[in-house]
Image (cartoon, rainbow, N blue to C red; front, side, top):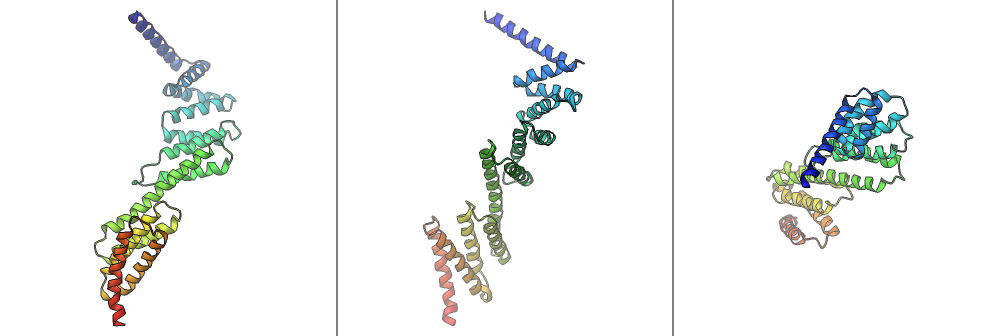
Length: 271
């Protein structure tokens, strides 16, 4: 019985493949469209896309082109060919702005850009482009059913850019080796990061590493610059303590404070 079922399934599969191949080679446009639609509905997007590419030029300027172009673009999206889907879905919306599929195409085009965004440690050109596309979608369709998801994607991309900027600034701190220029670069990087990202979830860490950089710069400075730099570092300590009095790093930053106060006393004594 199992052997019979297997043979029947094999026969159906071969028949289906044969029908598809015939449609692929056929000169009849309707046959191709029917087979493309059938393959699309069955989730066989690669096969469907090959047929759509053959027939779409034949329907250019005709009412059927709208439906065929959307399904073809969706094939690319479903196959995760996001470079292609981002272009074709955006093109569909621009070509058919009044289509009932225009909003969906606009969102999925922007989401395709999101899918192309790399991990935070890599160059973020695609991330910035995805943010621009998603923001354009939100502005254009403020009442969209996809609005919540679009905003979620925007937050994820924003976080990725924040993390990259934070890690770059942190790297300045880590590679500094008692060189004033290294610590000054780290302080500036964290200052810029905090100004550019006022609501960042990395705020506490950024303020700590800024303090750490300023502390190391101050205590290792030559005497002619030490007092000024220690006072600046104390300012960073006060800011950190003000915003994070119960930080897990409280003991560490208090040790920095004590060391800085000890070194500053020599200047107060002389004065």
